[in-house]
Image (cartoon, rainbow, N blue to C red):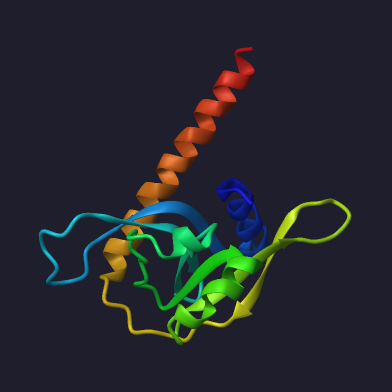
Length: 156
């Protein structure tokens, strides 16, 4: 399974009214953590009810155990991974972290995600106003990419 397939699957699973979704969001540092390198979360969602959900995508066991940070600062935090990867690493997933697993189902051959383990609410340590600003920056970046793609298509 590719990262793109996993992104498409989790996007289909999370897309609904009142939920705003953006991939690759730069996270503001929690209070008191000055001088550490910037972190990016693979996927961030915001719900109208005020919940922030952080998602880290892992396509393999090696990816799960890599030194890349698991950026979990949300009200709810999840891993997204193929089902076989989940089976191989589930003993190392903290109890409060949820999991969405992906697999190929149905006649269309598309990859879909389902929640295999629910996340437990955590106390956020990031300033929510700063996080909203970072979310808007990332959404603006993604909109810019979309507009450039449209312009390229219309000029052909």
